[in-house]
Length: 304
Picture 1 (cartoon, rainbow, N blue to C red):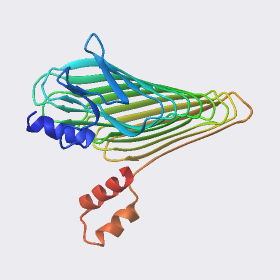
Picture 2: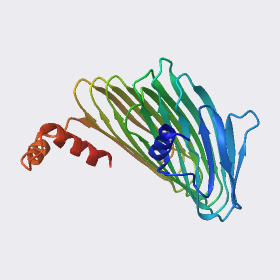
Picture 3: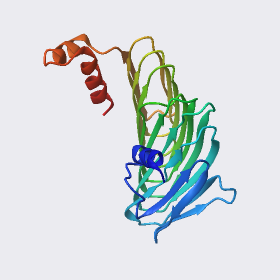
Picture 4: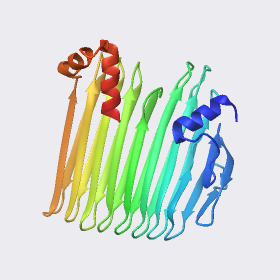
């Protein structure tokens, strides 16, 4: 693995080297390294276009890393990953994709992740996307499908903080009794980049809950759209929030939606889009920062 690949691996999964636990590394359209453990089995799909991950019940304090790296121009792929999370397990899954493109052809990664959480399972899922290089388009279109059993919990943290020319994220989730879903999205776009997010969460079990929060910054002439729908079909709680900073000539569309189909469902939505407050800039500039430095500090804090 060369310097470019190592830098991408670090950027999307915080790994300085190959991990010792369960992992699957995909590079330039091919699975190059896979390792399973006693409790976590990773099985490549027969067509070579994805993996199946089986986590035994009662597995605690273990992790899975599944980064994707593209360092060649013209690579375009569609990958299917299925996660089967056993009863009462508690694990960390780190995913993400980094594309380095300095050529004339588009490079893209489309991933479909399907999560099946059994009763009492608990997962923290971290996914980072980054694009680097001065070449043609760097495109990422992740689709996530989630089935949550009774009392299961999933925290999903997605981050896209630069360099991705175009992305379209779609997330669909169904929650059974007492299941809990938390989604935290962070996006930064600049130049002519486009980022679209679509969430649909169905709360079908009693006392299920979902908290969907998106924070984003759009700069230059970039475009962002956010659409999130939470459907309450039982006694449940759902919250949708979009909080965005708009700068320069960027455009942002935010549509949080709630649909109550049960008299005991409690659903809340909110959306705020605005520029950086002048008093924030002035306060930081009085401390010795120039306007650009002050803006960068505010953005960093907003997306942290």
